[in-house]
Amino acid sequence: MGEDGRVQIEDFQEFGWSGCWKCEHCLAVCPTGAISIFGHCPKDSIPPVQADEASPVIDALIANRHSCRRYQDRSVDPGMICDTIRIATKPMTEQYVLGEMLKILIEKDTDLQVELTQGVGGTSNIQPAMESGEFDLYPEYTGTAWNMVMKEEGLYTEELFDDLQAFYNDELSMEWTGMYGFNNTYGLVVRREIAEQYDLKTYSDLARVSEQLVFGAEYDFFEREDGYDALCDTYGFHFKETMDLDIGLKYQAIDQGQIDVMVIFTTDGQLSASDVTVLEDDKQFYPSYLCGNVVRSEVLQEHPELEQIFEQVTGIISDGDMASMNYQVEAEGKEPEDVAEEFLESRGLL
Image 1 (cartoon, rainbow, N blue to C red):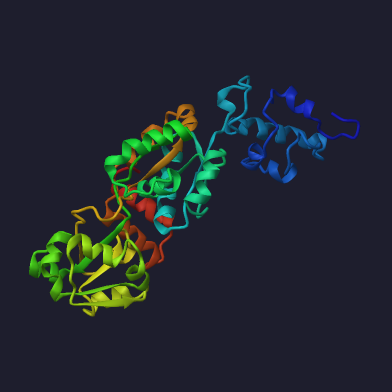
Image 2 (tube, helix red, strand yellow):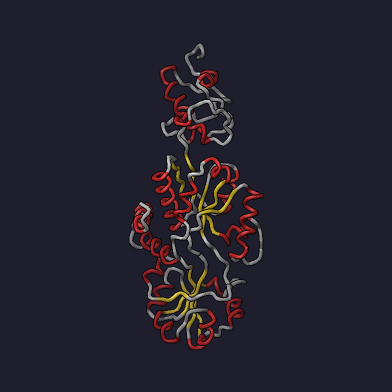
């Protein structure tokens, strides 16, 4: 203790603390509020903590030190350690739901706590934070990772998954696990009555009758290099007419019969409330965007109990399931946490 009564670094070391003193993470995750007292690295300047405040702060730091990936001391009883798994999500409804699912299951079935940061940003924001150790895991899409992380320009299909996994293992010390089962990619839908009338199940089936149908999409789709013209060239579509649509009104247009065919995302919330049929992309024109979890390998090694969580979520969500959950949040105003909990209960996981 210093002459002015302030806590010195040596005082922490007496309690077995020999962390790296190089980052704010151990302080930032302290559930008892130590960050409000310190707010900076103790190595750089001595925090103004009085003697009677020292004990709870030291206890908090010791309890949380294991979450710092640089800490080395193992002298404290593991039972004193309160580990925290830091999960990030993108600013998308379905990611909010997935984040809540992971939090619920991890805190229910393990002794770990979860720090969930929703809506961090896209892959370009989260991936660097994963590499720096700021986050431990996040839900990601295979096609996005192929293009944005691996910087590959070709079309991604799931036949390339082993290459994707190997890159993450070897180059990033991360791995893909807990593949949910749904594929948030582009798709084509037709009005259900049209699908039944012409027995349409695939894009190739649609090509047979395209000359009789009206196609609708957002303006950008008609301008994109991988948009309307490329799609028509691949499948031999020759639609009777095309229509530019406002993204917020396209489901209304198809429900009212203004168009017969339109472009969608396969987990659109409004899909679950619209009377349409999603067709199969039988020539794999669109990339695959299967959703799974990217996890730092170090975290899996330190916490093998997480494997059971990822096994539980593997293959449990279909495109339709995800669309329905998105709809409950976006159209019915439910909270993502409530939707996540209800879905897990429906699958017997709670």
